[in-house]
Length: 124
Image (cartoon, rainbow, N blue to C red; front, top):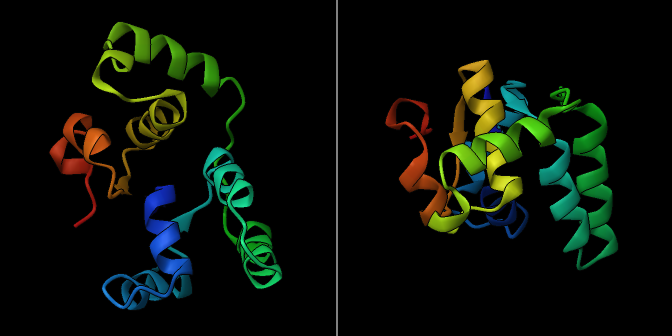
């Protein structure tokens, strides 16, 4: 299983050929886990009804990660590891905590986030 960061979802939604086919294959195989805060960011940036419909469908059908209490855990983890000083905000900290807890991969294009993710958890 894999978490797609918002940056990767955006490239998929833009149908960027560099990413689209690979992401589509992961989605078809049901290998992508939906994270509520990532989808919140996607809904925040909706540019068309088509995007809204597409994002809604993925949110509805993808397996989801239970985030109960993880915002607090992410805040504590972020503080302990000085992530804010490294330019990593709470949402990225939450994604990282999910990744660490579940021992799954994350695919991100965010350079600041890539610097702090354990290399073995970065999707390639």
